Length: 358
Image (tube, rainbow, N blue to C red; front, side, top):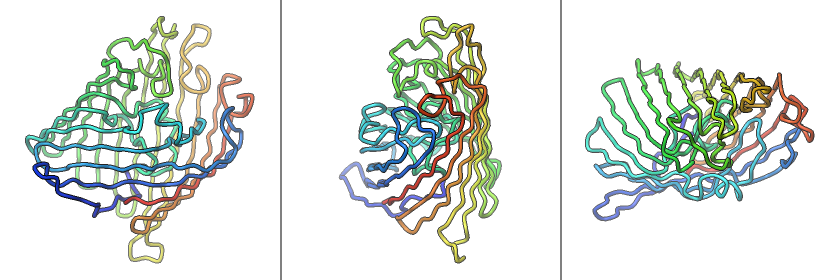
């Protein structure tokens, strides 16, 4: 979790014989949204359950595990909202993440199962992030993959390497490497990169968009803590090569940057429990429609930017946050953007999420 929301530091636990202590926690939250320039199939206003999840885990010893069970939705800037009753079937099932972990030493571990990606500065589920909705750069990233991951820590440097099916394709040809350097207690830099090392030629689905399943992707992420402030800029580059068999007759790429900022009020002030997260983004795509490049945004060669503000309040297990967001696009292809005819180039949303982290 990136904050400002914080998990329950004293979750439920029980002793399971030789397995040792098992911890049980979770997230339950409701979601309401109102927007303009709706995408066909979406709704102007709606209410839904954004999370109804239980986490079961063992966090010590040589053998460890994590399982995430339940329902969820994926509020996402610039894309139609899919209700939580439909998302598990369209994406990763009612066990969206679950893996076993071997930790033979403090420095080395090995994980296998349905793993969270190493890519990006935003996590998969709404409560894990500064903002309720994931951003435009997140739309280029994989989120959950089936595979294995090795982790090694040497002093201030943390290294991870993963081999997986990328965008949940069942084609095990994705590799990712991550290197994070904790400069000091207030500064961290991470470099992550990888992608497909073969051709993934499967039917395109919401969980496995065919062009992105064949991409290469790279991140540079910097995190700065300054008292009550958290500042996190990151840069992302992606490229889809020419692969005629998937309909990419010419290469295309995206280049984008985002800045996350959060201010958390002091616990002794009159505004204790309040935080003010914000995100700004810009992303541009390349390619040639006449040569058959894939559309990676709102038409081949399109660009977009966004701003999101998410005032947040948390008291013990309870949280509530109100979010306003705006997306603007340019150099678009008619029919590929917002509104009933796909020709509107802006979309504004107001979102409310409230729940408990138990």
